[in-house]
Amino acid sequence: MRTKFRSGYWVVEWADNFDPSLADFVSRFPESVLGHRIAVASCDSGPFSPSEYEISKGWVVHDKLAVSPFVQSVSDLPMPGFDEWYVYENEVPNDCHESFVNKFGFSPLGDESVDVNSFWSQVMRFRPLHVLGAGTPAMFFATRDEKLCRRAVDEWQQVSSSG
Image (cartoon, rainbow, N blue to C red; front, side):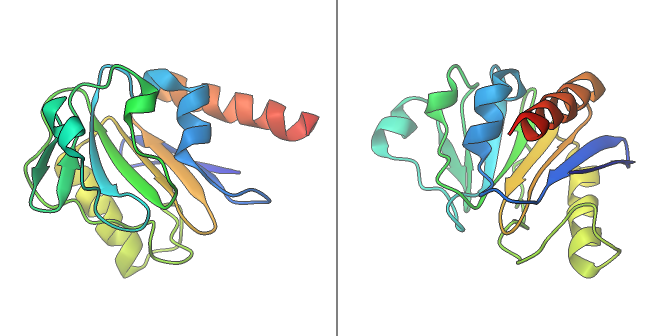
């Protein structure tokens, strides 16, 4: 696990000995998504296409970006793997959200590169509350909520040391 503070965000990244999944994260920290809107930049390595039922429940699609209604249950979110979400407290910018989790080895804590710089440029432009991503070989959580980040780090350290 690595952590860093960058551009107003606390970032934690997990990369060793597990198959990363946002389902693991949101089951432990449902408050990270409950009551918020999610812009799904990647779902199973591509755009998320809500079903007719999901659209009837308030999901919308802007170009290739699927946006949830205010999340009432974690089970309302798609989490098959290779997912990247931008979590907003209110309205979601109606603009393209590039996906980075599909770039092998991507890390928001990585050395300066075109992808890392593009990721942070996008985060600074849209200012989401959180960004969650799970790809290969890492999962990351970037947030403006310092307390939630510290809890995530502490709880994952406890899980890692007991396992």
